[in-house]
Length: 321
Length: 279
Image (cartoon, rainbow over the protein chains, first blue to last red):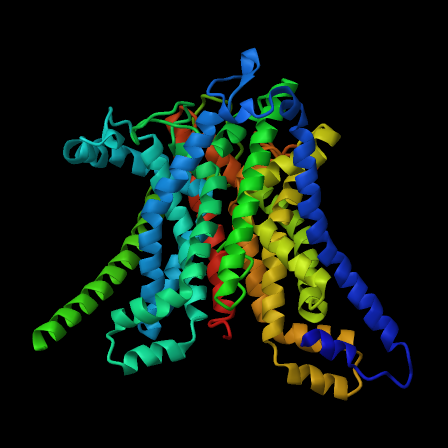
């Protein structure tokens, strides 16, 4: 629409205008090209810097369980495990809550509640990651150690998930902090999706005598389903790549344990902790390969998520808010 | 019949209650984080903290003036790169973006916005730091600019698209060249919204620490030029919080208070600029 309007511009009597338009479109186009170049160079550069381990270890990199930089043994499985489990735990906590928030704010709340509460939920996304880490390490984790974890062990201790000593720092703390950080992402994308649902569907349901909540479950959610799945995947992508906050609370020990109380380690955390201290070429490459893996997984997740969200009808903002 | 209606009404209320509860639950961490940051941070905030440099390791006292200035410097440099690039790319998408190229740029921006910030740090390390053989504020700024770029591009595009086409037509009808109509009419009309998008991106970049770890690194003194390792608030919070010293923990909280203050002021100001985004 806009593009054709620009090209339909009448030609000036004095000439010169078309040159200006040409230069302007090429100039801005050059900057648009920067976006494509950035992401492409990023993919190439990361593949290049992880090449040494790719050739030295191949697939055993992803399945090895021992990480011993001193002896050149690099198995990434404990980190993959820590990343995947902490992110899934974050989803388990954050998805119901953020869908509740999105439904409340877009379908049930009055206008001023929507403004005020919506603003506050967005503020959750404005708090820097490292501040969540600080809070997690000095406020959340002591509370987990003395209160929540003993309580869980007492009442749900028959599950292997809740066994072992309460340590505060561990998978549970990591999952909780991640869930707080992805909640605004999931809820704001979900709100966008719900806003794209045609209001005729809502009116139809209400006219048939549905209550508000029946309207949501009969008319709104089924229409928005693929977009909501997309919102959840965007949240997952954010959880997988989150670094500082989880590094400060997960305990940073490369172990695979069935207990949520036990410390763990994520891919992003090991990069953050070891990259500046790694001197050995293979060690650096192993960390770079971890970064490459993270990069590829989040890029794929994002592509799928955006396609799902776009199916509901309106493009979603590019931001991570 | 009426019993069934009562049940439906009960379910309706229960669902509404559950959704409200979820919203309140979601806001609990915000309240808790802000309360901790304010209470613990205020204790460590002092004139020495704001204007002094760190004391030698193990000696209590000292401040973080270099990190506050360093953060502003890195973010400032990032703005110089990220804002013009993002806004111009956004203009291109809004005005000439209906092509295959435009769709590909949009797609790339969306993908770029989902890349974990630590991966951006690794990328800039390989691209700049490894080649120049030194950590620098420039490298940190480049990493932050890459993080800002997709957000600014997409929000600029969205806001330009909201400007009524009739404004452009009026300008063109007066004989204004199309590119000037874009800049002087369309962009000017969308400016408050564009500024909001920019400020939100800047606020987010200011709080980023993962991409700075391998790019601007850290420094316990003033950096003599942007071409040297430079301290920043987020990285200092991380370093101090993970240290074994109680005095450093106290300083980490104070630094968090300063950082959260800066970031929240920017975010709130950005939203007040356009009280309601036009739908």
